Length: 389
Ligand SMILES: [Fe+2]
Image (tube, rainbow, N blue to C red; front, side, top):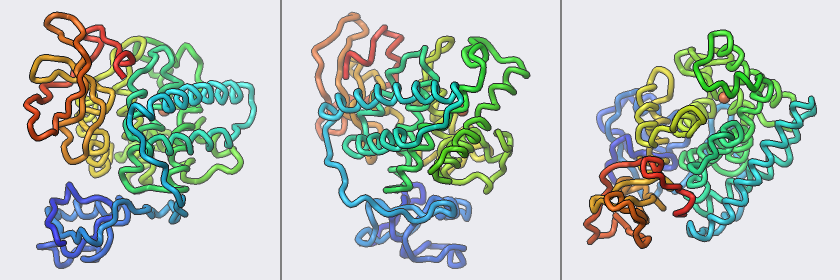
């Protein structure tokens, strides 16, 4: 079946049969959208709509980028699980990831070499969890211990990168290497003095320069790790690079930053903005997405930010919202096709300041009258997300 789609809805794996109004298009008129660069090109050339053959389009396609050789695919996909089924496994995994981060940082501080194997095992388990259920680990990302930002940020970024990469169609070995690099991306922070790392106020120029050196430390530590892949290295080494050259450690510009580097810059900023810290409260997911958009196209890749927004959604799982009936609800699951109508569980009445009987509501159901009024911060009502999952 041939369908006309706005270019904003074109994703990897779709089969393009024509690009109306662009006979001299720099990419071939027909074929699969195989990588994010092709999507970027469509936008850059001002394409508004494309004709897609839905019968030939794939659900997800392995991505080939200049630095990513086509990956072998894992033969068996993990079975799907409901959020309720996956949450206990995801919690266990999350705690194991914290312990692993702690252990790695301890070892590096002692001057020992990074051991890759436990990180690889962790990456595999992260990917399996996300493939079983996209919401479970992502919910846990929002329950953070503000005193442990260092540990939890790397895990949060790895969760976001796994979700984002999956959305972009990465699979198999490439996805695995992206996840490994994400888990390791901030390892260089062990080399930064604690008083700078945990300073509550604004850093001085000198302190900021020291802080920024963590990216180069991460790169050097990871580069010296036997068996590390160039993809994992790119992910970690480029996580603070910006398209306009204002990033660090190299100040890379435009095309010098690979797709992996562009992706992790987005996930890193999003996690940092939404995280509760000792000295400030995290921004709402909606505000964080707005900030990301404001950073495009000069600092962040606009196409990738748009894909990220599609992936994470305005009301991500684990976030809290106010419904039109006045109740506060926790978002359990989102649908790609109906991002403003998630599956929610109403839990609290802010007017009476009392908890209500937890009721799951599918806002996308045909007869559902309720809708989301706004995103709320659970701390405004002294609610702990962890109690409602
Ligand atoms: Fe960093």
